[in-house]
Structure formats: structure tokens, C-alpha cells
Image (cartoon, rainbow, N blue to C red; front, side):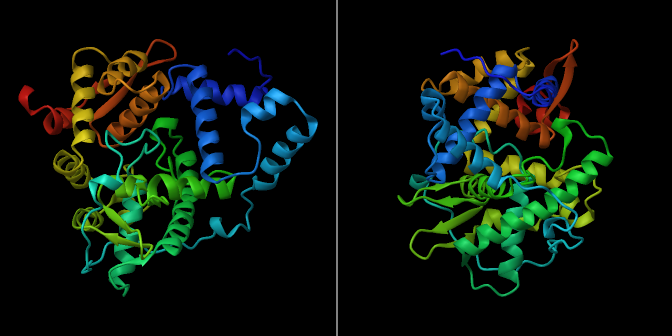
Length: 356
């Protein structure tokens, strides 16, 4: 179905910038992913608002007004007196984490395949497990309240994100280089926090299944009956490695240390094999010259015949973003606005030892 939509010039300019930075193949992909993400968020929050199709299809003024009012009521401005922009940041620096750990979640409670594409950065996961380790070391008895940990961790992530966002602007970092990426810094605070809780902290479904990067990576478990978070051995090990931003200062140039990056790759090789094999598969493709977004999406689609084109794009986008953060891939400009990828020396060493 084709539709003509009047989009403000300011948004058009921002979409063009996002596409030019290389994270999206074209404006159509940007808009499709934005719509899918918005609809998923509406459904996950069990919103009483009409769906996009209902609102657009009927064209009834009362539905249009309901949508507009809901979005306006949830949109927030980052004012100077907003507590999220205060000078205080929760101390998540390294310490001796002598804590009780738990077994990783059962595989039946987790999605198979590589990580979902919206889990597009790993520093947020680091912040989650470091904060959980800190709480446990400070006296929590092996597990932490599900609701409290999700709420407080998302708030802490926002505080760190807003500070990093300021530094990103001062350093004039491009979209793919921003260290605040994936942290909940949006003006629509409530929705931003909800997305962070679902995507990175972890969510317990009514079925007992788990979603979110931290549980999918086997770093945390969420007890289905007690409604509590626990830290696994792997999560504790990842939390215990020193981090540039959390331990050296927010002016650090990288979000993950070399030790963290190496640990992550070795961990997924043994514990999250679908993620490791997807990284290997993508690196092999890039080495063979399949190094542009569209061609890589077509290649990634070979991993699962059931993925739609948009699903393959999402998986490819998230996988590339994580691999760039891990130092396994680098981006280069192709022409005026295109993007290509290269496997780095670190990527060859950690993913493709056979070609050393």
C-alpha cells in the first residue's frame, strides 16, 4: 500500500542525516522501522489508543485528536531543573563484587537466533549488569526486586545518557559514533524509559519467557515466581571488568574496553552461539566484498528463511552496530552519501582466525 504523507521539513532533514550516516539503506527503511517500533511499543504497553491503521483508515477527527493528545501529554522537554539533568550520577564504578550468582535462564525461556536488531549497543547492557552487581555487593541477598530494579536502572541509564549526550555534542560525534546511543534520552521520557527496560534491562512475560539483551546474553535471570533479578556467573564476570565510561570518566573515547570486547566475543562463542555465528557470517560476507547495507541485508536473510525483508534489515542493522562498537567492523564512506563496511584487525583476530 502506498501513502502520501506530509512531513515537516525539520524531520525530513533529520531523516536525511540518519540515512547519510549509514545506519539505514534509504528513507523508506527508516520510516518502516519507525512505524514497526512505534506499533510494537503501543502493543506492549497495552495501549487503548487506536492502531495506526485504524486512525489513518477512518480519518475520524475524534481518533486523530486522541492520538495527538496522547503524544502531546507524554512529550517532555529537558528543562534545566529536570532532576534527570542534575549533577548527581549514581556511582557505578568498579569495586570488589563478592556476590551470590544464579544459574542462567533456561534456553526454553529465550528467543533463538542472533540478538534482536533493536539491541543495537552493548554499553547499556554493561550498565545494567554493573548496577545489578553493585546492588548485590551492597547487601541485596542474591536477588533484586524485578519492578524496582527495572525502574531504577532505567532512570540511572537516562541520567548517564543525558550527560553523555552533552559530551557527544561537544565532541561533535556523528550518529554512529555517539556514546549515548541506545540510552533512554528521548524527550518522550516515559516511552524512552519503557523501551530501555524492555530492550536492555529485561522483561518477564506472562508465559514466563524472557526478552531483553541482558537475559538473552545469559547475564541475568528473572525468577518467574519471585519476580526478582539475579546475576549469572557470566554477568558477574562482565560486570567486574573495568569500563572506560564507568571507571575512567564520561569523557572516555570508547564505550567498551579491549578486555570487555574480547570477553564478549568469547562469551557468545560458547553461550550464545547463534549470535557468534551471525557475527562470523557477516564478517565472512564483508571479507568477500558484500559490504554495503542492502547487499548485507540480503546475505543476512540467508540465516533464517522465515525472516521478512524488514526483519532481515533490523537484524543486520543491530548486528552491524554491535560489531562496530566491539571494534570488529569499521564504516567507510562510499560516494557522497553511501556507507560500506570493513572487517578490522581485531575482527579478523576474534572472528576469523583461519585467515590469520
